[in-house]
Image (cartoon, rainbow, N blue to C red):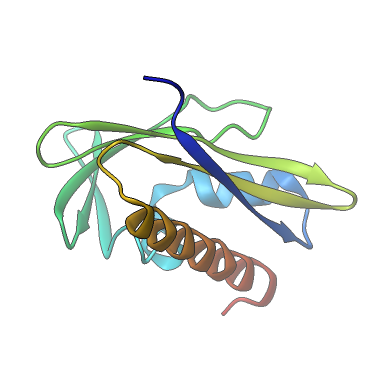
Length: 134
C-alpha cells in the first residue's frame, strides 16, 4: 500500500503568523472557526475533548513551537487516531494557514471532496474572524 492521496488547502490572511498561530492554538477558539469539526470543546482531566455530531473527539496539538506547527492528533470515539498536519507560515507581510487533508482508505472520493470543502469553509471562517471580527 503506497502513500495516501492528499490535498493541501491554504488560505492567506492579512496578519502576521504569530497572532494566527496563537489564536488557532487556543483550543477555546476552535468552535468559533472550525464548526465543521466541533460545536464545543472543554479541557477534561487535562485532555481537550470536542463535542461533535459523531461523538466526543480528543484533540492533542504538537508542543508550543516557534515554527507555526499546529499539527494535531484527533482520537475518534472508536479509539482510531487521525493525524492532521496544520501550519501557519509567513506570506509577505501576512500569513498563510495550510491544512493537509489525507485520504485514508476509509474515505471514498466523494467523502474526501466533502471533507476538503468543509476544511476550506472552516479556514475561510477563520480568516473572516481574524481579519474582520465576524
